[in-house]
Image (cartoon, rainbow, N blue to C red; front, side, top):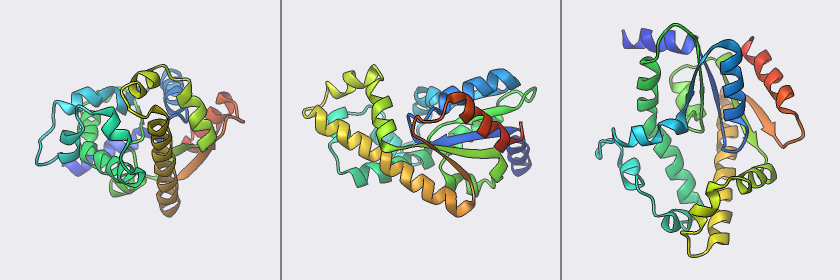
Length: 211
């Protein structure tokens, strides 16, 4: 029965994954408004998910639920990347439970970096229900630098410049791995470098989703 519910859920859901600062939220919000879709932004549920942690089941979520930003960003980048993928694996069941609880009166659009290709393939998400937006490194750094909250996080770090460099490299490597996984499964990838307008990006995604 649960498998049937998940299949029905996937058949009425559009998924937008990828790296941070690629425009996922903007695109998803606009599409949700135009097509009257329930909009589920994974990042908006961070605090709620932390309340549902079971230490034995979610060891990394438990470890980083109250992050020390200096400790977090000064670790080797390869460790940061590996743990990011593991954290998304730990959270994914919570995400699916949330989606299953949404009303069935409309379709759904879901966006977030947590939608990694390996997991989506495990849930047999069709290629026409999923797309990845991956920013180039230069575009990613530019957009991150414009976000106000960044300076407050870096202010807690002993070496802000190194912390920011590590952070950007982590997200860049994350995007490269997501891209490689997506190619294996035939999932569509949009490279975001700022040269294409948001309107044209949305048009490409609409075509992919047959909207």
